[in-house]
Length: 420
Ligand SMILES: *[C@@H]1O[C@H](CO)[C@@H](O)[C@H](O)[C@H]1NC(C)=O
Ligand SMILES: *[C@@H]1O[C@H](CO)[C@@H](O)[C@H](O)[C@H]1NC(C)=O
Image 1 (tube, rainbow, N blue to C red):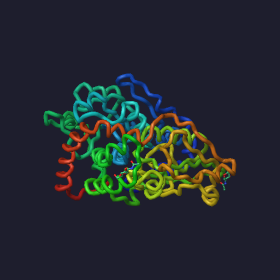
Image 2 (cartoon, helix red, strand yellow):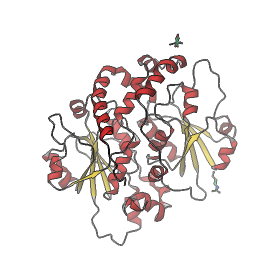
Image 3 (cartoon, helix red, strand yellow):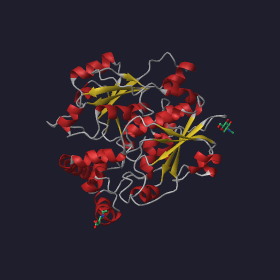
Image 4 (tube, protein in one colour):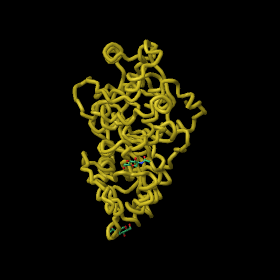
């Protein structure tokens, strides 16, 4: 934690203003999306909120604003970690979300729409402002706009080379201007890898939502395992970096929501926001891999428990998670965590395999009168995203083959770099 730097808000939250987080939701009028070309969108900043109430001694110092861009197609904890590191290099983080057109031109078709990508990025706890339709390459004009209009001090990018189709460095201009800072790439995951995992399952399984166990078990699953072994090595340090480190204040209303949260998407962000608004503290139960596959078939989940946990922890509406929550909520859990309200979204993955009759996992909270069904703001599920990828099978296979080569090269030549 010490090397987080004084700007890391985790540290601020932990040591200086632990009680402020409860009020934050009041400022959370976000993901009200504007489509204006460069209209930045303010998202609530915990750090900023804290500083206004308790001005620091060094308050005369101008706040350092950093910019990072990305496609953020299929948001995963690697993106979240990059933005966390970027935020630590300044006080306010402005994120540019690359336009659909630019992604098509540089990488191939995106899986998520601009609006969905914006919702995901805005939902991250380290993000202060979002600029929609950012360009893929930082042109001179856009750099001027960033420096003059958005008052950006530094442009941040990972240490993996970002090349334009003509082979030139997308950040050359920012480097020349001396306003470039680099962060270390997050090991173990990439959108390419996730698309690969999804493509490894049979197209038919995904398109028909058919969770035929024998098929997935015999063919698709074994293929998935052989070609897409996750390189992710979960450490307790990473979890601490992502966590609020906060326990509920006395007399808090603790809201509980559970789920697989596989392929963390805009629908998840919105339901978590709604759930958080119903209380003072949001506890999220994340089903174990075994629980998910028992209920949704052997090809699921696509992201394993630790990957799913980090994605949920990175969300600004989440206060605490249970890593490997049970399918059915027990009386003991409700007592242990002093849960006031249990909620569940109306749009959820088809819960069970055909022909399987199940006991209601919410029977206990229902009998206690503390269960509430929440209308899901978005008609979006993990299967819908997986289906979009499967529907564009050919295009993604091409896009993936190219990336897979460069990934292989990266891992072959990789050296130790100090993590910060
Ligand atoms: C499930 O998969 C097996 C083997 O691939 C196949 O023989 C069977 O017909 C499938 N069942 C359904 C309901 O699709
Ligand atoms: C438990 O939650 C209730 C609200 O449901 C709250 O009034 C009570 O103070 C909480 N208990 C503790 C010890 O915080």
